[in-house]
Length: 235
Image (cartoon, rainbow, N blue to C red; front, top):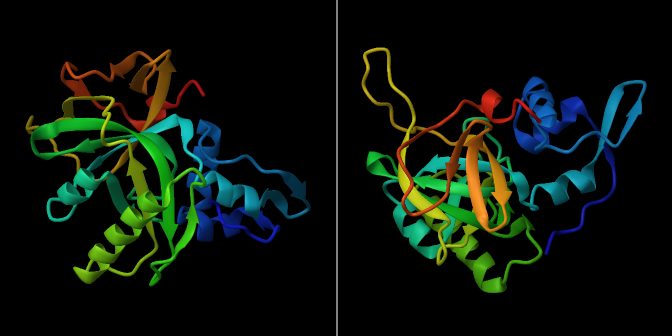
């Protein structure tokens, strides 16, 4: 379940401690629609309810998706268990966000897309979840705990961590994804997570950006990722 937090209000500068992002980046992501809007204002500026922020961090956002590279050492085994692990507070990773769909990008660009069943968050140096999605089963939470423990035992650092629990038995689709090309014309690989927009039409999911959607099927054509601004331009 989502763990209880004392109700208190935070200023914009204090949100840096929650997300690990700069105030400018936080404002940008709020405009895109995947961080909560302020709940009140005061003479010092906008205010956010701490409890609402914590709840949003374990509630998947239906308009937000992501694609992330699979760690070659531990990521393949984690994916087989249905979890994806990354740092909790870093603008270079997707762990601060709450995507409802995550693409796992493997060598060669083949990407398998999964629905996110829930999120488990860990503080630094702790294997007790700080927060978790209320609908996760105890066995799923234990998978998350075990994954973080293995990372730390292998020298992966004791930073705050996020574990996304994925619907591994029913992937939404799979196919090749292109990140782009370098100035020399060579294909680029995906080195860090990227956020995307999600659109759902009946039982079919799409990721990407308006005018550049990827329909998630098992016969997907090669797809080139849009940049973040184009993905969320119309929100």
